[in-house]
Image 1 (tube, rainbow, N blue to C red):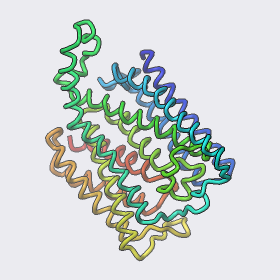
Image 2: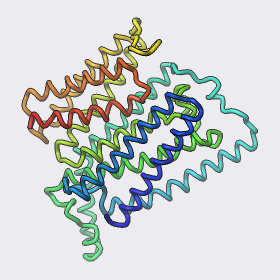
Image 3: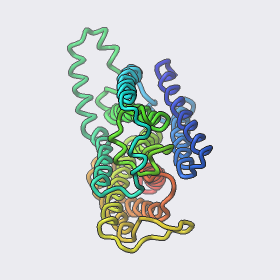
Image 4: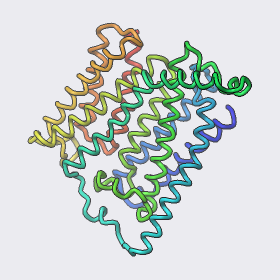
Length: 365
């Protein structure tokens, strides 16, 4: 393991233990839902990083490492740059707070666990950002690699040799794309976690208070936001299953598409058309409806079939797989939606789906 990689890993382990610290605080304050959600987020992030390091550095089960030059150095430069910018925003918020003498952020007093439909739509649309991961895996990543190779030609030979490596080779497109996706998701996770930890630990100094409008009441205090669960879910499956090309990226892309569109359909269709509420075992009440449940299952299945058909040029599956894999994923989403766990579905959907579909897909190689 080289020195830049050690720095990066230490940074993410440090953030793991910050999440654990927030988890302990939630436990002490008697906030059971926040405790469970935060702890599972910590567990998945910590285990996925550790397992990746073991698989790559001890067992050498993949040609793709965690991250390589120049992405590792770029990531290290990003960390202090972001912290400086965000610290300035926090200081500005502190100055504004001293002038207004606000005692309590209004969002904490007026928030509800049922968002207005407008904010619910904003919240779901924001999830579509992860579609960019699929584009970087299968389209944009190759374009960026070709651009880098073209730019390298204008550099002095000694300097260009420093940047040119095997992952830029014509036959290593997916490995380069894996490094690019890890880099983009990792810096996003770092930025989102930094902001959300400030929101939880120092809510008055949080400079992005308008974001609170798309958070439910239970997410406004000691609970990690849904954007964190989404980022940890994506990051964990990318560093675990993205190592195995091209099967891993295809499973990751399929799982994320099914998770996103299944969740959007379940929530929005259930809210607008659903009448009969679901009563999960062990829960007194739920805002979910049966129409939303079945809409989520159907849309996730349809989106899974569609994305597999789009990506079939990258990997050969038996025709049965185009039905079995999306059907299995859709049923998993339906089960998770029905039981309405305390853990954020932005984490459970992509992680559980990817894990099951990854191992199930070996039956159709």
